[in-house]
Image: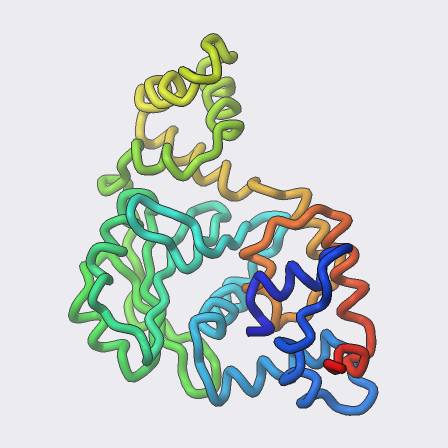
Amino acid sequence: MAFSTRSIRALASKHNPWPLDRLAPLVDLAGPGATLAEAFDTAYRVMAREYRCEYVYANAVIHAHGADPETANAITGLRVLVSIADLVIADQHAAAYEIKTDLDSFGRLALQLHSYSTCFEYVHVVTSAAKAERAVRETPGHVGVLALDGDGCLTVVRSPSGGLARIDRSAAFRVLRRDELVAILHRQMGYTVDVPNARLYRRLNELFMTLPVEIAYQEFVTALRERDLAKRRAARSAGLPGSLCAAAAGLALTPTAWGRLGEVLQRPAREFVPR
């Protein structure tokens, strides 16, 4: 798929060949003189109209949120306990989104929502208009339900409810990176690393679990919001087309690679015809 993180990473690479076979359908749809970025946008409109895959839902949520990379972080594929969140957006709050397209089963939904509810104050199911009422019936009352309509707009079917009673600090701890944990504990209790690396993770867990849940959760939200900020700024400077918002949320490229990607996307689409 041209919109996959694998394809976008290859376009940003200095050494790997362009994924021409994956780009061929986009190039076929592009008008004369179109750039590769414009070809992505054209292909996305067709995909949103004719084949509403998970990518379309994720991109719609990011656009509806209006996530500014300076103040919000959109993350795809974040592991939370035994599940992987389709999308997480962290700004002043942190919200997890589980996407269920018309091709998806609700079979694992209860387990997925339980995992997210231990880590995130706000949890949503994003589905089609046809499945929205079923999502309301089969999910806990605190879970919000969003429906993607025929015009590609999101409708709030049920708003999520907040509160920290469901938050498990040990689940939040496992989502955080080691440098984030050290920074949190330094802010909260002046901690500096005092054990060998082999014992550090256990030491950080012991200290993090002593924080009041309100403080631990706010630090968790802040860490996610600020994660990879320099790389997100570079991604914004690259001027990616709106159709690639969800792809960018799943990548952590270097600033140089983001710049290279921006340049590649402004090249004529015809340069990407497989030979």
